[in-house]
View (tube, rainbow, N blue to C red):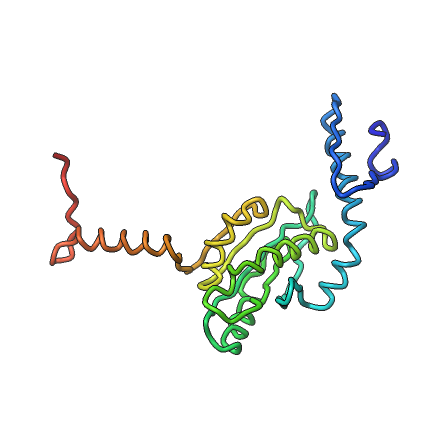
Length: 220
């Protein structure tokens, strides 16, 4: 099987959802060829569903609906496109406020290469980007762009502004195996993170004298 070139041999076919294949070979290229076949077989199974969902302009998870905007930029590099997920700000506000934040996020960035995705949060709550349903929606989002638009699953990047930055703070550790990197812009940490931030601020305030000069303690 592995002696034939990847583009010539019959693709790998799976009869069950989970199979473990262990192969010991000398040529490193065989591993890449096998991975190529596995990915192509997975794409063939998911591409039509991905096409339908992305054409509808929204993703669904349970009773939650997440509209999304995306644009493609540059040429497809070897290994597939980068995928940038960009979360808007807003939060606990009327829908029109979060809608305007989403419209701004759509045009906020234009990468030289890759797919830029700006989803619209399903809810209008303070924690709009880190409720439990977001994990499933983002899993589906990544799968669809890998299947339909040649996104590289090892080059998925997460970013967010304000309330979107809150989402990065929560989602990056929760979904760490999905992202190559994450960037939090102007977001505030919640819970323990906010307590740590406030403690640091208080400590710095205690070190400041009345004249605003920082007074560092000396070693005993």
